[in-house]
Image (tube, rainbow, N blue to C red; front, side):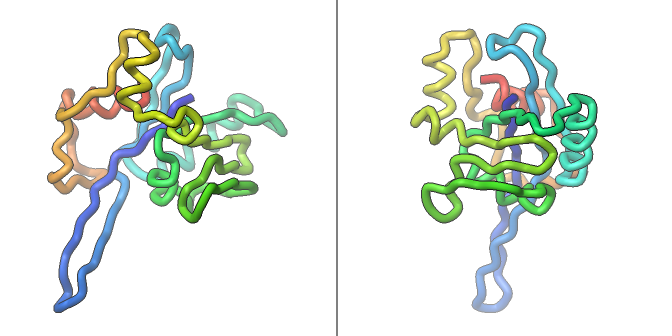
Amino acid sequence: MAFDTETTNYTYHEGEEEIRAGWLYIWMLRIGDPLGKETEFFYGRSCDDLSDFLTRLSHALNLGESLVYIYVQNLGFDIEFIRDKLNITAELHSAAHEPFFIRDDRGYEFRDSQKLSATSMKKMGDELDNGLVKMTGDLDYDLIRTPHTPLSEKEMGYCQGDVDV
């Protein structure tokens, strides 16, 4: 499984103080064959959607004591937006806010694919030679989006592409 989020980060001022805020506006999960055959994509627009989905999937898979690995490119960033929706039972960090993995009590272990591969998503896509490439330039990060912001087909393609590589 591969997982990614897209977020909006916003900076504003209250008097002299600079305030930074950020929120998730979409998450994507890819389940299936690493070569793209028999693959399903799932997405949601909020952290609550993700929590509900992970619970339903855990029950459907009847995970029990088993673990399902979910690979996240740059887990340290994405986890900050979803941490409150996980029931963390174990984690291993190389430094503060730099996890190798985070385990949830529903049977999921989120692993940082960037740390494990020591390469960028673009380079990973190039090296896999599976016809999938990291899309660039299709998402304007200067736009402020919320979970209610409609996303174009092109924007959704970019989002899916990040878990496709």
